[in-house]
Length: 101
Image (tube, rainbow, N blue to C red; front, top):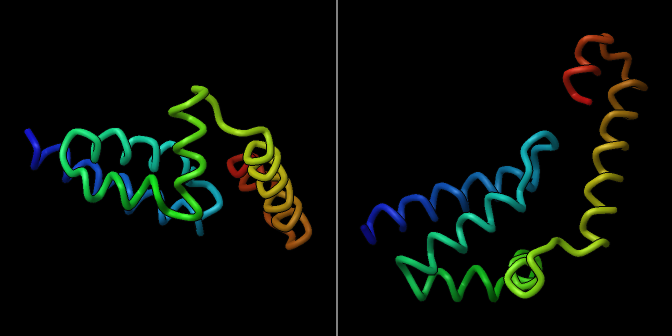
Protein backbone atom coordinates (compact mmCIF):
# COMPACT_ATOMS: atom_id res chain seq x y z
CA UNK A 1 0.00 0.00 0.00
CA UNK A 2 2.94 2.36 0.60
CA UNK A 3 3.65 2.82 -3.13
CA UNK A 4 -0.01 3.70 -3.75
CA UNK A 5 -0.03 6.26 -0.93
CA UNK A 6 3.27 7.69 -2.19
CA UNK A 7 1.91 7.95 -5.72
CA UNK A 8 -1.24 9.66 -4.49
CA UNK A 9 0.86 12.05 -2.41
CA UNK A 10 3.09 12.94 -5.35
CA UNK A 11 0.08 13.44 -7.64
CA UNK A 12 -1.66 15.62 -5.06
CA UNK A 13 1.52 17.65 -4.53
CA UNK A 14 1.83 18.22 -8.27
CA UNK A 15 -1.79 19.32 -8.50
CA UNK A 16 -1.31 21.57 -5.48
CA UNK A 17 1.69 23.23 -7.10
CA UNK A 18 -0.34 23.70 -10.28
CA UNK A 19 -3.13 25.18 -8.17
CA UNK A 20 -0.77 27.83 -6.85
CA UNK A 21 -0.46 29.34 -10.34
CA UNK A 22 -3.79 28.35 -11.94
CA UNK A 23 -6.67 30.46 -10.61
CA UNK A 24 -9.41 27.84 -11.03
CA UNK A 25 -7.52 24.95 -9.41
CA UNK A 26 -7.50 24.99 -5.61
CA UNK A 27 -4.11 24.29 -4.05
CA UNK A 28 -4.95 23.76 -0.38
CA UNK A 29 -7.11 20.61 -0.66
CA UNK A 30 -4.41 18.94 -2.73
CA UNK A 31 -1.70 19.78 -0.19
CA UNK A 32 -3.90 18.44 2.61
CA UNK A 33 -4.44 15.24 0.64
CA UNK A 34 -0.69 14.98 -0.02
CA UNK A 35 0.08 15.36 3.69
CA UNK A 36 -2.47 12.64 4.48
CA UNK A 37 -0.98 10.28 1.89
CA UNK A 38 2.64 10.99 2.85
CA UNK A 39 1.82 10.37 6.52
CA UNK A 40 0.97 6.81 5.47
CA UNK A 41 3.85 6.24 3.09
CA UNK A 42 6.90 8.47 3.52
CA UNK A 43 7.94 10.18 6.74
CA UNK A 44 10.61 12.09 4.81
CA UNK A 45 8.14 13.56 2.27
CA UNK A 46 5.60 14.23 5.02
CA UNK A 47 8.23 16.13 7.02
CA UNK A 48 9.24 18.09 3.91
CA UNK A 49 5.66 19.08 3.11
CA UNK A 50 4.63 19.95 6.66
CA UNK A 51 7.88 21.88 7.17
CA UNK A 52 7.57 23.85 3.93
CA UNK A 53 7.53 27.60 4.57
CA UNK A 54 4.48 28.24 2.33
CA UNK A 55 2.41 25.07 2.58
CA UNK A 56 3.36 23.82 6.04
CA UNK A 57 1.43 26.40 8.09
CA UNK A 58 -1.82 25.67 6.23
CA UNK A 59 -1.40 21.95 6.87
CA UNK A 60 -0.54 22.57 10.53
CA UNK A 61 -3.66 24.73 10.97
CA UNK A 62 -5.78 21.97 9.49
CA UNK A 63 -4.19 19.29 11.67
CA UNK A 64 -4.54 21.36 14.86
CA UNK A 65 -7.92 23.01 14.35
CA UNK A 66 -9.61 21.23 11.45
CA UNK A 67 -9.91 24.55 9.66
CA UNK A 68 -8.14 26.90 7.28
CA UNK A 69 -6.96 30.21 8.78
CA UNK A 70 -9.22 33.21 8.20
CA UNK A 71 -6.37 35.12 6.52
CA UNK A 72 -5.93 32.32 3.96
CA UNK A 73 -9.67 32.30 3.23
CA UNK A 74 -9.78 36.08 2.77
CA UNK A 75 -6.75 35.94 0.49
CA UNK A 76 -8.30 33.17 -1.60
CA UNK A 77 -11.59 35.05 -2.01
CA UNK A 78 -9.74 38.27 -2.89
CA UNK A 79 -7.71 36.51 -5.58
CA UNK A 80 -10.86 34.95 -7.04
CA UNK A 81 -12.66 38.31 -7.13
CA UNK A 82 -9.64 40.03 -8.70
CA UNK A 83 -9.36 37.29 -11.31
CA UNK A 84 -13.05 37.62 -12.16
CA UNK A 85 -12.72 41.43 -12.35
CA UNK A 86 -9.66 41.12 -14.60
CA UNK A 87 -11.63 38.85 -16.92
CA UNK A 88 -14.50 41.32 -17.05
CA UNK A 89 -12.12 44.21 -17.75
CA UNK A 90 -10.45 42.15 -20.46
CA UNK A 91 -13.83 41.84 -22.17
CA UNK A 92 -14.44 38.13 -21.76
CA UNK A 93 -17.79 36.87 -22.94
CA UNK A 94 -20.56 36.60 -20.35
CA UNK A 95 -20.74 32.80 -20.53
CA UNK A 96 -17.01 32.53 -19.86
CA UNK A 97 -17.28 34.89 -16.89
CA UNK A 98 -20.12 32.70 -15.62
CA UNK A 99 -17.97 29.59 -15.86
CA UNK A 100 -15.14 31.43 -14.13
CA UNK A 101 -17.44 32.61 -11.34
